[in-house]
Length: 548
Image (cartoon, rainbow, N blue to C red):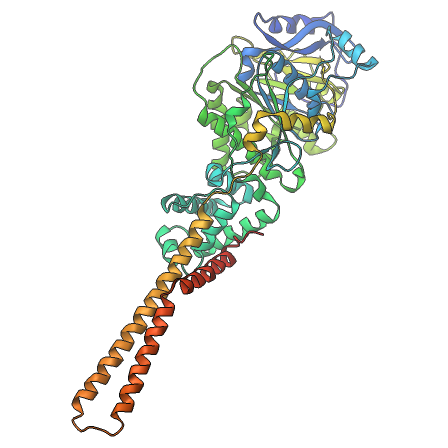
């Protein structure tokens, strides 16, 4: 039966009927992640423990709820327990609070009371953490990706291109591959598009067929705007190897990799698509492992709504396919967002675990989203699940997970456990020291700028200038030769010697000597160096590749 949300408070359970219905669904035999205790109503807490089987975490999950309801603390709680059981974790640190995972938590009366209420033996604990930063903007090891690896599909999502423009961008990437022009950074792609829209590249543009000069111009303008936002820092080498996320500390605990996201509000699409690239790269590189006792990695995809907003149908299909298939690689994915309706149905259907914090129903749209959320849950023992969701307190959630047989567990109103690490940012100095000491800092810290598309196109332009110069010289020499032959023919027809013949011969000899001198200068190494430098400056001016 479908529940409908109402404004009234949820009714209390009578005689423990909820506990009797819920408890058998969470009696697992293998390793688990402890979430908290079952609440019978807003005041009454039972002794039933709500947990997730560790082996089912790679069936993916969702953590949802309005701002300030405790999603970040839930993520922290899950990351701690995964690490403790030897599972590496990757998460985006949106507000900087997750950096506290590296620091033991601060005890207090509230912590003690919550831990005691859910049967938790709380102990302040820090966990092994690795800090990353997109393009090195912030505290962390730089994360970069080459433009070729990022690909036209994800880039089209970032640039907000329509279907036609996305298809055209794919042709640009195809041309670069065919022409042997490595696309490593944003400047490389700009150089290629700039070449195709220039006089020198018109023939190449024509050969591409489906790419018009006007569409190429639109793509070039979007790339310039994208670069002006500072996005060029995210693309380049050394490219991050996603397998480095699958690290275990010396004590056997899983390494928690956190990526800092400064200025997220200015570049939201870059963040979400970069995370999607990481996920796709993991899928590409990792071997098939099937069903295993515990995941090889759990990937928390925060601010998930940014990934799906204004996404094309093809893009959504690729995301859904990646999420569906990466389970067999031993990777679990948790999407973190405000409402389950932020996630497309084809992706939402694959999320076996749900941790739903409070949703608010202050507007008609809120009420509609709440009703849609309730309809995604299996039948529950609560008469009004919508009322439960709107009345949840901070640190409480409605939970359903996938049991060891692959079936959904009963819906459980849960008071969540308290994280044992610091619920706030770690000390900046300690973070800097951790970054400097990491073996991956030496691997990724320094950017590499090897020869790629922009340099090759500059050389090609320079060679074209030399070829045109040689052709002009040859044409001038041929013209001079023709003039000389005509002069000799006229001289042969003349049988009467002229008084000024010696003078004419002298002038002709002088002109020939001057012509020879000019050709010697043109063919000299110094003159060619001068022309090469001039051509290089022209190329840099055209493609904006001059280094400052």
